[in-house]
Length: 253
Image (cartoon, one colour):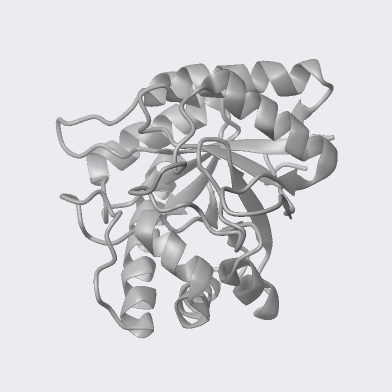
């Protein structure tokens, strides 16, 4: 059994840092790097990409709403076409800085409110997929498992990898529990690791509003901005490898 372990990183701005990127880079196999929307700037992108290169970590673009005050976790009214252009600009920015560092950008993962909107709104998902495909047909989409984002990528012939979350609660629809509701976040590292091991053995994900649902997964995400992200990622790594699961990036089969 093999699975990727990813985190959303590079989410600082200017002199302000967010999370312990240096430690997370030693634990994950893929890093979704903020590219100037909800967080990030050229220097932060450069430093984060250098850390990824040093640790041999696969790199993805993590575009989000241009809403630093809300950390990209609020929906900003935009048309699907506007969202596509916004994503194209941010993906292009990370690809440009990555070229200076000498690392490839292999995938795109929408952030926060944008990712959740694309998960349920096919028109938004399609707009993001079109932007990704036109930038580089070899770019993959890292999509929330069982959602419109996944279906849109498949329909367009874009490579898609399915993602589940270690530290987030699920609804029966396959979408994530909104952060302002009870059960949205899982903070206990042992609980998260045990839930993931059960999922990998059964393919069933517990939900807050019904019976467990069947999901597919190529990658597990731990949010790098969470206070206990390093401890949780380390606990997950130990639990999975102890049960014979190989932690390996989906970009390097």
